[in-house]
Length: 531
Image (cartoon, rainbow, N blue to C red):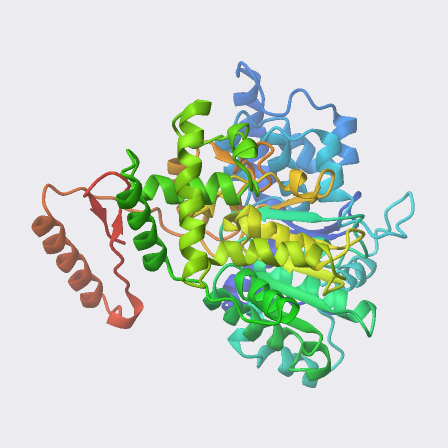
């Protein structure tokens, strides 16, 4: 058996191979590679430095605990020299992947039990015995079953892999994604979160494939927030399913609003006519003018969206006692009574115009689904962070509660709209069924360190509204240059520097099509950055 592990120039290949050692991980049974020469050369010097250090990064974990997580003797000796996270990061390119990820999780504060569950157990073969098989051929075979290595038996198979178009790699799964996408079954709704570039959408698409292949009669609703995203999902799902019309015919790919519109049209017998944002804003302006209110149309529209529709409030009494978390200003009962009048006038104006709003269509669809049979066997939700509670009620009604009813992916750090959602209060409990993807496949580690350094001081509500979300453990396996940042006193100076930078790139032989310029406005400021 021959395993292709790297492609470099002839002499470099011999040098590279002479420094590498291949072994089997004692915990995950995975094939491992390490720069054994570099580790052996570095460890003695680091041991001297560690002896004088005030504390060590992994001092609180015993050798037994680390061995149970797959840390072998050579790596264990090196681990006992690591003082801080920066030193661990310097070791990353030398260590076997599974062992490195175990150490990264521990360094971020995850307990040994959590690390075993999220890193070791999901990679360990189900039928693995108590003692590891030291055969590298067995390790390769195991890696093949988990799609970490592809075995080929002839040139035709190899050519097929190498000649695949780039688009085929858009739906390729890393093992950390595969374990959540192809889990046989979940006991209820499941939530998958992760930073940008961690493959949440790819995991969602593969989950659809898994659900479709479990039963010939399964119907799946694959939904997202915008039409553009729905179009992308439809295109990539067709690619993943190799254009199989029979499978594609059992999946409805659409936005939540479009699905709600179809439900209302079908069950009410007539299509609703939702107005656009501009028309809705103009209607609120009429309400303010007609009633002579002390509030702006923006405040009333937001109160209606984030309190009245979000909590499905239909009477003055329910509004009077409703929670208004995140609205920024308190309203006593008397003021709430005054606020209910514009709500009633707004809705009466909608009725007079035989119009509605998108969120009211969702509210109507949820009511109709509550009194009818579910439309689908499974619902898969992508980019869920911006869905409104009214939209979540629609999705809850689209599928009967039970195993594998809702598969939800999203990133609260990419939230655009400030919709406060408690999934548990809407009948979508993901307790004990949440998973976080932490490996970024889109950006380099240097870019991640820079960007997360900006985001980390900000507290972000998690996807379900039950706590806060953290970027702990978010990392990349790719490396590149560190981002370069410059500030300028005026827009003219900034543009001049930008022109000079791009000209410098072109003079270096970089084609104009390989450069990009993107202005990014900062919140509450007129400053701009270019990259």
